[in-house]
Image (tube, rainbow, N blue to C red):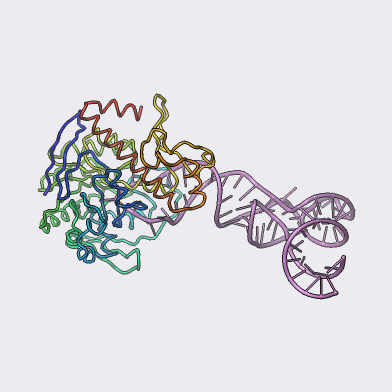
Length: 391
RNA sequence: GUGGUAGUAGUUUAAUGGUAGAAUACAGGACUGUGGAUCCUGUGACGCGAGUCCGAUUCUCGCCUACCGCC
């Protein structure tokens, strides 16, 4: 069970408290993604030091390795990964897309024409039907099957505070006809998950519908009508930022005010501002850790200029004698103790430590942003903060 | 000292009497419910000198360098 309380509002933006088994978290908040029961390159102690309130793990990956029963025998996910704060698990539904259509078409849930059109096609290892999702294991190619029953059962064994219903994330390249068909199936699965759900874990329903207004509205109404503890917005968010904003506007207008709202998989700086502005409470995103491994470090944008840039490419030779910290405005442990020269050197020499250092900084950067956002909403200064960051 | 072999991007290499293709590295870019994956773009080379030839990275000679063998 879950208790959500809205504590302040500034326009549609809101702060709140969310009471879960392992503690109460403040919203809006971003969950770092710990797919295989670890945020890549980070220890649980690191995350605690960063004051991360909640992490999200993945059902598909954990049921393959080490297996749900193993985790259960070891005392559940919290104990397994030495994390005594709240946890969420994703249902595995997203992997039907990321390992299926997304792989086949080399696209993501957001598709910007021009960026990716020349990319080669990959091989799908997931196939979806009304019964469930047929996967091949990424580890040994064995055949796996995930349906609402198994997803709920696995998530129960993993034992996170907050779990998600099994859904299908549709592709921005899918037709309306397909998306509509898929939506019906996602709705059926949502009801089924609800019926099978017997624990005191908070269960979150997911709104789908691609970038079509009628489908999004139909889904928002349907999911809102069911007794979920919270509501997530998932699926394709269209082909432009404008699409994404429209989808949020259409959907949120029909969601109950008193339930927390999670925007699945989103988390770049601009999107966080746009989503919070429209009333989103929760995010999860791989961006801070993924870009860290590619050599990008977040930096506070220069104030008073029009061009906003939130990151630098620290592998660039132009930093090889730069003694400044990654972000001169940052007070995290990495920025206090290490220089750009050193981080640049670690990348050039392929030293593993660098993944930890840059991931640590990037997560700090976004969690600090979330703290600043919460504060600004309490002080009714959200728009001011947004303007300061985005112009 | 002498006989042999070889010198092509930073590195490892391919082909060729009409000035060269790749891999990797490097420089940019993409990445939003994680494949430490991947993809896109760009920079970059015929050891030095002479000769033959319309034309030499390619053939010949000398030099230099490296490796192997012999004294």
